[in-house]
Amino acid sequence: MNKMIIDYRPIGIIHSTHTNPEKTPIQPVYARDCVGKVEIDIQYLPGLKDIDGFSYIYLLYHLHRVHSVKLTVVPFLDTVERGVFATRAPSRPNPIGLSLVELLRREDNILHVRGVDILDGTPLLDIKPYSSRFEGIESKRNGWQDAIDQSTAEERGRRKFKS
Image (cartoon, rainbow, N blue to C red; front, side, top):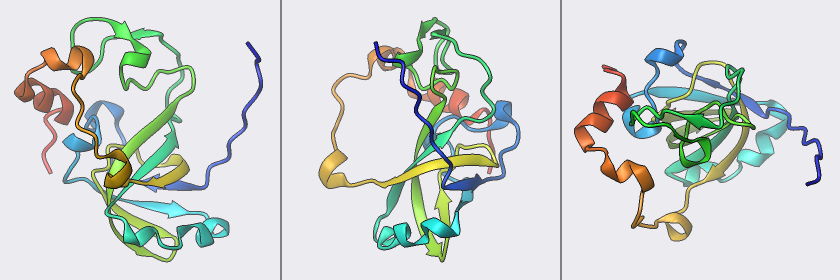
């Protein structure tokens, strides 16, 4: 396997009220009331043209507070160890995060978003629009997650979060 080096530079920073990983909601669905701001570096301002026409955007970011790699993890929804690629756990070989957030509005280089499950100060790598035309797929299988009841998922995902 080719061991090339891939070098990414942040295009901005994500601002949120979340400073403690243990108290941050897990996944945007459990952070629906959490608002934040995405500050894009001015040099990338032309890239935001037409972004405000979308209701939702994907944020891809560097999980800057992850310092170890684990190939098996116990996910927040479960008590059984799973392969990291069958989870969204942060301790990955390439600590890249992905969140689908609601775009509330744009003010120049600032995107106001809701559904933020991201730590304050997280470096932003990229933004991609969500398109129901391309991605509105109903999943038939959700792997091991299908065995977890909804109330347990909500309790664990919110980490008892109160807005």
